[in-house]
Image (cartoon, rainbow, N blue to C red):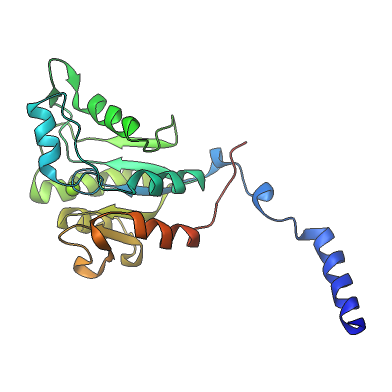
Length: 214
Ligand SMILES: [Mg+2]
């Protein structure tokens, strides 16, 4: 016991000078430009058909994969910007007059997904896109932000178009997570079980906070 005292003392002295490096010494999140990007349809919702159903019936609430809101809130709380990147056409209208963009925001808020001015983005194409055009649109949406200095750290999707856009934008396969029928496709990381509950429990503890909100 006696032999250990000096080292404990040393730790105390060293810590007095620097062990406080933690949350309080992290930079202000306002200056942080690290991003998590996610597709919406069949990634956050259970099926593409869920949003189609809402287009047919504006009162319909598209079904959601469990655990998605908690996962994305976890990223947001750690300081990441959340980029919702969807191929839902900006020209579509839900009901009489609700824009597709507003209906999407309303759904995100209703289900407690992170939504905060400046810390979350929603991008929709100006018009309907399919296939190769979807890849080009999603790639460009990411590259536009990268050109502003943002770094895309993690990505979530369910379709080949998501994977190809994420890869084209330079996101590493080890940080691209895929859910649903194509989980794990093309060397991406499979989110098992069709929901985000286990993924959130396993993955989020590995993700450190990158800033603090001041
Ligand atoms: Mg999708």
